[in-house]
Image (cartoon, rainbow, N blue to C red):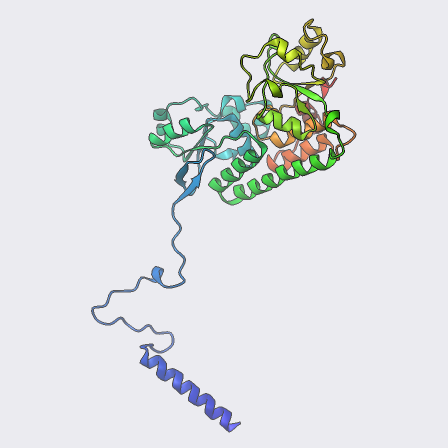
Amino acid sequence: MKRNLFALMLALALCLGLLTACGGGPAGEETPPAEGSAPVEESNAPGSPAPESDTQTIVDMGGTEVTLPREIHTIVDTWSAATDDLFNLGAAELLVSAHSAAVSDVSVLVYPAMAELEDYSQATAEELLVLDPDLVICSNNDKAEELRNAGLNAVNLSYMTYDDFKKSTLLLGQILGGEYEARAQELGEYVDWVSETLSTDLADVADEDKPTVYYLMTSDPSNLYATCGAGSIMDEWITLAGGKLATEALGNGMGLRDVTAEQILATNPDVIMIDGDNTEEVRDALLSSQEWSGVTAVQNNAIYSIPKGCFWWGRLCGDTPLQALWAASVLYPDLVSYDIHEETKEYYAQFKQCELTDQQVDDILRVDLLP
């Protein structure tokens, strides 16, 4: 025992000697720097965290590296689809401008202040500089670059596929940070769930049994040939839902040009889905048209009105994931594993923080216009 005590005392003495030799002072005291030496900055001490920058650098959907403020408090959105996605992240309060196309009965229900915001989507760079937003959201590279050259924090968040919708949402969440980024992650996971669910539910549907779907984007009963081609997001949600885009072979993109009525009628679709307002009048025009009378979808009255929430579901919008679910529920009501009514209600509660009544969900789904 004495040997152990002696060894302990010797060890303590050696440690104190080493501390003195290294210039260490007594515990709780700092040794003053040698005369003429530079003071040591505490922030530069090993292990100290580097001060956080007040900027962040991201790569937008156009592939451009952009430096933005780290904290975003005000947003001008020049693209209605991104406005709807801001609703999904609970970030509507950051908007200082409301794109007129994004103002609807449902968007005002989700965020009442939308009705009072001015529309700066067509504003000049000079007008936006006066407004001085922390972020301007654009849908193409040229507009974003023009605004950046004028001194504005502009980013391109455009997308044309479900995968890019997910990427754009995650990027928006990254830019906004905090709780917004967490919600973006949840929405990204939901997009994955949609694809996985439909793949499982429709796994046994043979390719030859998949119906052809004519997508009609119009609010004008006299214009029954406004449609899209392959490679569009419409093509993707129809495919995810177990259908085939009727006009796939007629061209590419969101809007077909130089395509005749005869070419469209020759596709003889099994189902028609109308995307736009006045869908009751558009449907009646199809049913009463001599030109369309020989089309299978018209003969069977297989004509459906695509839902409209904060924006039209069939186009680029924050409800894009729901559109594929809705279309599958129309094409395969006995195969899908979910209730589109309940799924819509839960989606709005989770992502748009809006509790919908059963009647409001019916209105969004346009249940009264079902064939």
